[in-house]
Length: 438
Image (cartoon, rainbow, N blue to C red; front, top):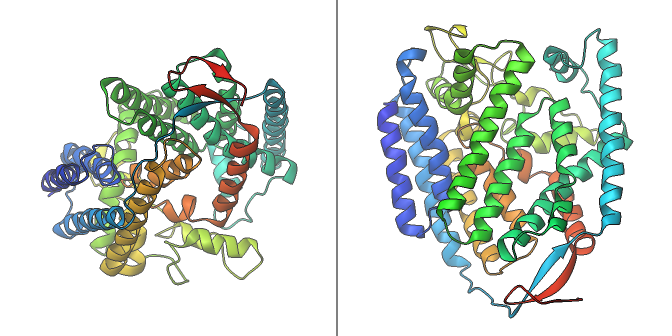
């Protein structure tokens, strides 16, 4: 059935392309994510020792088709013509702001490093011990909270990094590269340094995929160069993921590394099948606890009686075994991700799948029309964020966690003011050559 699911998903993708007329459209991205997962799953069926059932095929196909329907309806409801402008404006960043960002980033990342070292010393562990980080953030313990002078600067750096990447991509795609454009890449080393210290691959993946989305949106059409850039970005992440895992675990076995990448891509689909077949239950004590975890976490931070840990696991320890064969991992393979469908199906069943994907498709269709009705603007950053969950449909549901999140709304507001007041604009005629002061 995994092979049948793969064929079904790519057929839905082809149908989505014929309707939207664009390969880089939200339904096509969603189908590509799940299609690659199903393909990798098909290639590993014998090795992992399992196959998915018809119910899983039905859930995945239903969600993708309903998402396409919602996207088409949203696009029709908010159809806008593109507003042309006779002049273009290039983004510029003053060198004073660059120095301020360097100072803030250095102090924040170094402060994070020293503070984590202190806590790990209390745990009698070292900063390169991944298990220590798990114990630091793990279930059953009070969540480790950083000092405000570390937390807020790091959040600010994460926010401006995406905005600056938009400015950088806009400049090089519309006017060509200039050395001053490199100023916009200043926050990236601190972003990566923070992610590396936190052993958080997801933040790095978010940065890469949002950058790819912005690049494709600015190019306006899919060319050979844009495809090469996008594929290179994804393979760079996979290579980083493999090397990062080798360094963390000390296991320099290529077979184990390849297995880990395959599980990262397709393990969620296998775990989803286990969930749908009823092999285990869900530890959630609130309505929609798995789906609306970010809202419950926010309410818990406000002091309300909501446990911030219970909503992060499906089973007792958060992991489920998806195979029975002896692999490079050992006996079977464990994973704690269930694709975008897992949380929804676990909380609300088939009704939740239909409602979620219909509303998501409707909203993304409207936002796409709202964004592309202008040639530029902060709305592109918001749209790129909204596209990010589609890329990792095969991994987890993150729309509620990353996008529909009170903390993220605050970051969007801060990002807008950074875009509006920190990034200076200079007018440039349509030929992109003569520049005058704005």
